[in-house]
Image 1: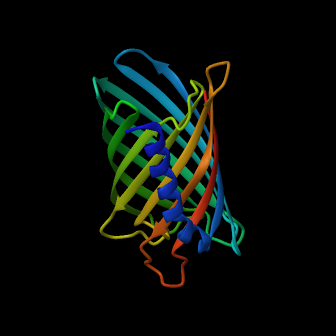
Image 2 (image 1 turned 45 degrees about the vertical axis):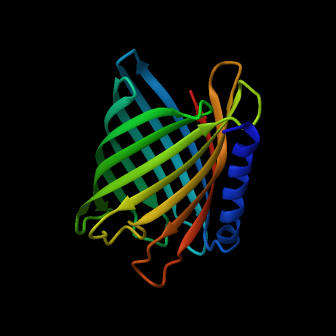
Image 3 (image 1 turned 90 degrees about the vertical axis):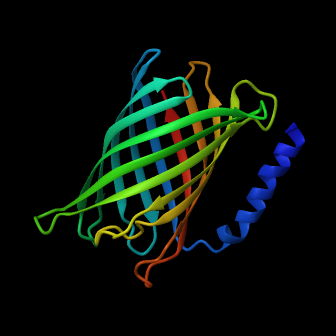
Length: 226
């Protein structure tokens, strides 16, 4: 696939998404910080922290911490880790989420110019309300595919286009949108110190459980990778 046809593909996808973007009913920003704690040819230990803020009538916030281990095996990767999140605001019932997970991923080149990564992730979600109350938990599967490419000739700039789908049978009471599809476009810039700055947008579309909830959202993402 040539450079111009690839640009046309990305432009077409963005135009297709523009209609839904214009109708987004919720707006977020999300800040992320990622780092590789330790790495060799076979193993990698990584950590991530995030801060998510919704701009709406009830402006809740979510703080997250993630840690994971990757076992590398050629194009394959076997992962496991633990994520925890705290969602809070004075107008809602604040709660913690603890989420152990395992995953398998496969990476391969496509058309010499595109790098493709697929991941299937299984996670066990556990919700704990402040001040006691019922503990809620359920299992969820996630499938994601990301396309890494370069829209222009630059060793320091790259782009990533991604899609992720969530599968769950029984939604938890504390989770508004357990089922969703996400679409993401990121721009990544390698800094002189070899760290990486990334920014972009993500569109979330929801399978509504409560008809009073809104059906989609737009996130602005800004992150830094050490």
